[in-house]
Length: 326
Ligand SMILES: Cc1cc2nc3c(=O)[nH]c(=O)nc-3n(C[C@H](O)[C@H](O)[C@H](O)COP(=O)(O)OP(=O)(O)OC[C@H]3O[C@@H](n4cnc5c(N)ncnc54)[C@H](O)[C@@H]3O)c2cc1C
Image (cartoon, rainbow, N blue to C red; front, side, top):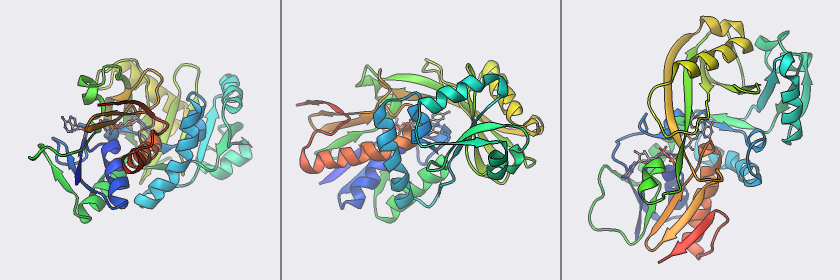
């Protein structure tokens, strides 16, 4: 039996990878021929930051997110395991105390330790938090690599569903699945990509701020991804002037050289999210829905994929499954 997966974003590709690694025959259907800007996954920062995310997320995000780092190591060659640095401007020191209280897995760092970790930030910050066990990846490289490895294993990718209808389908269409999942909503995220060869960073840096938190993810060769807004809206498309202004101001506060950066790209998409911002598996007859990755697409897709595969193999009802019907 070949299992059909609808959607080749990070959710569909992760499930296809998990199932095919376990020896199951799978095929993917996506109207787009390759990973690209049509999918929310294209715009992600790629932070694998279970401890930092726990600051504002439920416990399962940390637990399953920790296991995700190993999953991405096993299935791609593009994980950087260099931790996360969390900083704040001196006037926002209270934010750092609050962040430390609400997360684990960190070490307090002073100005000298910050300079040792990130020499280009030396002398600019006197206190911060370092999360040594966190990681990051380039989402675009990771999506392409999952796809390439699946193709090498003989997995077919179709632009339209081929006949006949399969015995089992997995719906991983992201926000497009709202036609079947009415409690799915969009949470808009805006990002930009800068080229700034004057700054070199080895790891994602988060700059806490009561209103405009920023993260900067280094992509190598002087390229940085800056993100990301969190707006209750399913509007996709271009970045607003306000968000651009706020993200760039925060980057400038992190390092003034970002003021001279070239803006290579701006983009926005709507993260698929359920009301509690945790993912869901739903079984309706011959269809298994996998969705609601919210801001944790790369962090939680390995757990959802593993649970989906376990469910299909054993019939167990995994943690993220909240519906089984005929
Ligand atoms: C700015 C921004 C930053 C982010 N940063 C991070 C981060 O640092 N770490 C992290 O873990 N997550 C991050 N995320 C969240 C992450 O991007 C999402 O959770 C994730 O991309 C959702 O993946 P998905 O596969 O469910 O949906 P998508 O990536 O949208 O994929 C859905 C796929 O379904 C296809 N499709 C649509 N209709 C059909 C159909 N009828 N039949 C078949 N296929 C169809 C689409 O073409 C698409 O390829 C970020 C998101 C944004 C917007």
